[in-house]
Length: 173
Image (tube, rainbow, N blue to C red; front, side, top):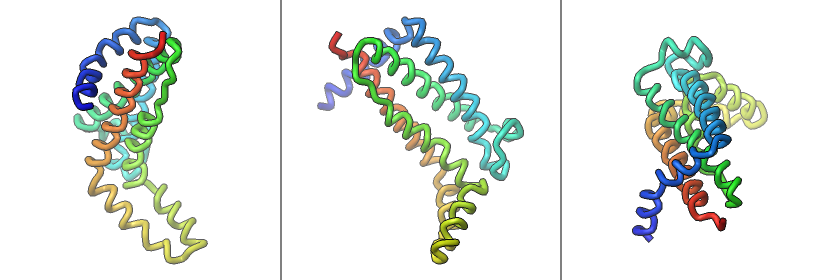
């Protein structure tokens, strides 16, 4: 099983080359990459902006956050291209892992230092008063483990890329 997985990983560049050889998949992949890159560049620095998301975030963008944005956008764009290529070839392609990775990638920034989590906790606390004490510990956990959450997001996105590359290569066509 490990040998098969390693062989599939080695074949991933072949699948990516096949997918990017098609004009339509190249356009969709590039569009997804650019939209994802813009989104991640604006969202990732929100921890440093007190939760503000927008062009103001670019002033606080670090090299590390720009690298994360580039990696996650590339994984998203390649997975989209492979998914479209696989669908065109008749393979059953899923991108749930990539979508999960994309969601996990934005959650730490949105929940750590933005007013979203306190508002959600306050809404829940209006119905269940004991839930009101959960907000700060959750935000503290997310702020403390933000790097690990980004690593998990990248792993999910890479897993989605791997699955779509494997399906695109081994479709019944």
